[in-house]
Amino acid sequence: MSLDDTLNDTERAKLAVWDYPVSDKYTKIWWTMQESGMPVTFEEGIQRVKDSKGNQDGFAFIADSTQVKYATMTNCDLVAVGNEFSRKPLALAVQQGSPLKDQLSSAILKLLNQRRLEGLKEKWWNKNPAKMDCDDSERQSDGISIANIGMFISSFLHRPS
Image (cartoon, one colour):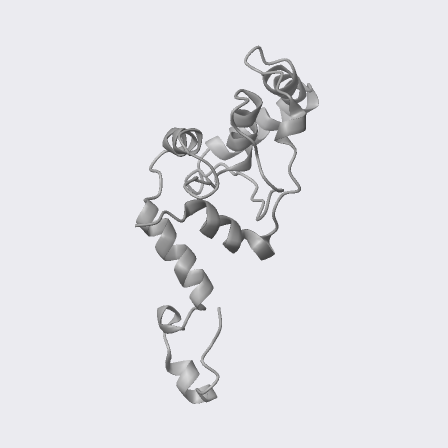
């Protein structure tokens, strides 16, 4: 975000978070995303990518990295671009004082100690029967970074009216 440099510290402090002026670049990205309509489900996002017609009228979909990896692993029409950003671990939530907390913790530790989680990962990622053998030469990408994601989204989501 960029702040209006003409505001003094007192005036700036009076602004609510949503009143801070955002740079035109990010505003344009947001408007473009709103105009194109964000997918409601992961499946809808994937279908819109597959239905895209190239760079000018194409559609880029930002989603959970695990889902994207699985989708690209099982469909040669898709390619993941760039590396993960803003990685977030998953957690299980239970009500405070619930006996489920200790039961879940014990079960997860047991699965880890028995190497069952490694086995499941091997089964679903490396030996998955749905895994496609895609030509990787066309799927290679130098990727994008957080620094240039704005141009990426803007160019792939822009649809002339």
